[in-house]
Each structure stands twice: as structure tokens, then as C-alpha cells.
Image (tube, rainbow, N blue to C red):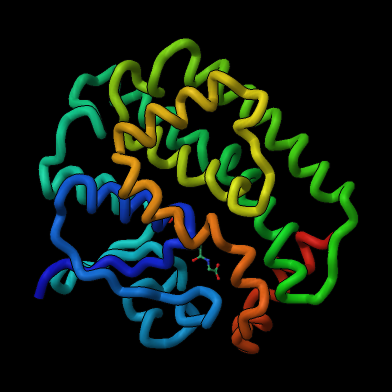
Length: 242
Ligand SMILES: N[C@@H](CCC(=O)N[C@@H](CS)C(=O)NCC(=O)O)C(=O)O
């Protein structure tokens, strides 16, 4: 049996794994786990990832969760071009440095825009006051300033002249606000330039294909939400709405 990747392209880390696998011609079976249908909460998926989150990988009897671990597994197993996760110790350390920072900064803030603009109204029928979005945008602005000053500086990519896993993880996250109409690239020329370079490096067609769902998320606003999923997400929603 070949390798299986459990993904929903609405999810940022899933898009990173998808783009990486496709770009590197890694053979895999796309197992669609539809988050809106609560398919990740089902017992069957729990056997692949007990954490009940996507992305997840199954390679024979071996299963793996967490996007960073999956990307590193794929890069090692398929010996992908060095620039993705450089063998040079200091360049590699730059990728590690970004990936360590990413989860509590860029990921922590960019994804909240989707919750506020789309998911909370969809799940609860309530619209949050504009101040709530502003709060998130202000926090995100701090992370973006740090991203530009510390990680990007005047380089085309985080590590230097070539794309790495760090850029991939960052871009998929920063496309989440775009899908809900918060154009974080506007008035940020350096960030915009970096986005263009990443799109070019990945390939425009693949980039567009991977982001099609999130860029059309508003069309999903009438979909039926699985009641079990509503229950599962209730604590998260309560926390976000405070
Ligand atoms: N740290 C994990 C995060 C995975 C994650 O949060 N996945 C989300 C989608 S973006 C998910 O599956 N959420 C379902 C849930 O929490 O119920 C990674 O990088 O893979």
C-alpha cells in the first residue's frame, strides 16, 4: 500500500504538506478528511491520528501527525532538493528557528481572522463586534513586523536566496486572512514581494490549486455543519468569543 496523506485544503498546515508533496513529485493517495463534516472527529480517523487533527500521514503501518514532522519525514524519505531543509548547519538552524517561532506567532494570529469572520458566525449564528477583529489584526501586525524584521530582512526568502520549509509554512498561514478579505499584503511591499517569490518558487498553478478552497471560503457560508462538530468545537468557540 502506498503512502496516504489525510488532508483538508481549508487547513493551512495541510496546504503546506500538499504543496510540498506535489512540488516534489512524491507519490501519495489524497485522503480527504472534511473538517466541516466533522470527519476528523470520527473513530476511523482517530486510528490514523488520535489527536483528531489534520494533516496526518500513513506510510504502511507507520502513522504520523503534525505538519512539521510530516514535512521533515517527507524531505528525508524522498531526499528532496537541499534548499527545502538545507544540510548546511546554520541554514538549517534558520529554518528550525522560524518553525519554532511560527506556531505561537504567525499561526496563532493569522488563523483567528477566519474564526472571527467566517467560522464563529457559521457555527453560532452570531457576528462578533468589529473591535474583536481589530484586536486580532493588531496582534497579527506585531507578528508581521517581527516576521519582516527578524526573519525576512532584505532576503528573497527566509534562509536567503532559495525557498525552504519555513517560507512554505509561513505563506499557507498568511493566505488564511486573504480568504476572508483581510488583505495583509496591502501596504506591506516587502511581504508582498516575498509572497510573489514564494508563489513563483512553488509554481503559480499549484499555489492557486492548493488555495482555491480558502480563497472561496465565503461561498461555503451556507453549508450544513455537522452537529457533533459543533459540540466538539464549543469550548474553542466560547474561548474565542470572550
Ligand atoms: N500543530 C498541528 C496543527 C493541526 C491543526 O490544528 N489542524 C486543524 C486544521 S488547521 C484541525 O485539524 N482542527 C480540527 C480540530 O481541532 O477539531 C500541525 O501543524 O499539524
